Length: 99
Image (cartoon, rainbow, N blue to C red; front, side):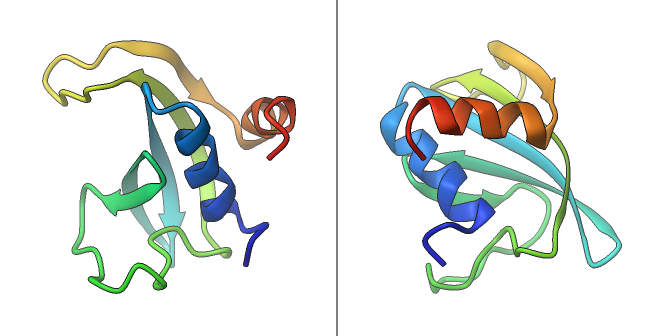
């Protein structure tokens, strides 16, 4: 589980606490938006389990895009650092941080 997509993205936000990741993904045929900040994930569109061991972003999820946003995150006026990153581009950023 340590190398799961969700865990890697959470570790990114631990190493970059001034950033929030907004992940747009398709999970079981439904679209979801997930905010990841300081190592924690939460769905912006559906209930999030109380148990932190239940992944918000399962391995079978299809990542559509990832936005890097400055914290604090304000959904009305987000301050984007980068928008619409592909999973492949994000993997490069993760690798640069050793994640």
